Length: 235
View 1 (spheres, helix red, strand yellow):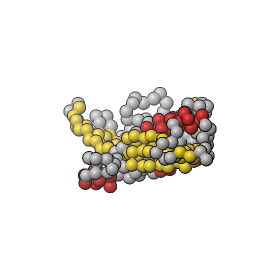
View 2 (spheres, helix red, strand yellow; view 1 turned 90 degrees about the vertical axis):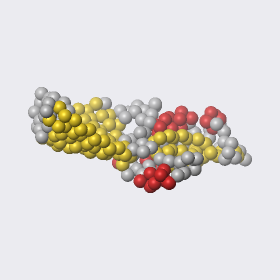
View 3 (cartoon, one colour; view 1 turned 135 degrees about the vertical axis):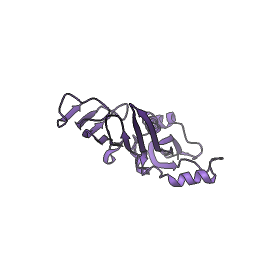
View 4 (cartoon, rainbow, N blue to C red; view 1 turned 180 degrees about the vertical axis):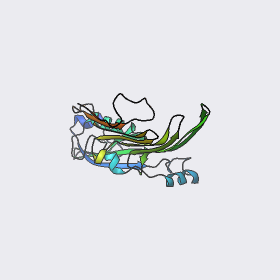
């Protein structure tokens, strides 16, 4: 019987060479502060953790390029770890084998959340007029990995409210959604971008389409009318 203790599993090269099959995938999620780490177990950090919603396990699993029962492929495991580390709402991420028995490798995916809620206020004066901008943003809204922000602004020429929404896993898939909606003194502006990106090195499919309408406050009006609906696909 080919058995390896949990504290000394083979390395990735060996697992791939021996044709290991992926067994259990254990997700270990850690909050912003880890109470097991010296210096992070105090009351203040515990209180901050209480204010924060941990990233859902399903969000982590959907970023993996492998599943239970797949052959162990080192490049896919490493790329999955890189994809996780590229998420702004994760402070760190790693994937490592924790046990090997009868040709089956159990893996642990370790992630630690980052603090993602932000607030800001900017007050100034230009052209004899007061200007301000204030906003709220969360890059991991409700622990779902979605970015949501709202901004209120008042400038020299116009004022209004801007909403932004970014979904890295639209409806639990690899599709991505970026949407902005703005209402200002010139009217309304909305832009929606849906894409299927190259999510791995061996991906062969890419799609992107963008729909917009209106005039945003942060750029000059386009040549087309504000009532024009523009659709721009790309493959």
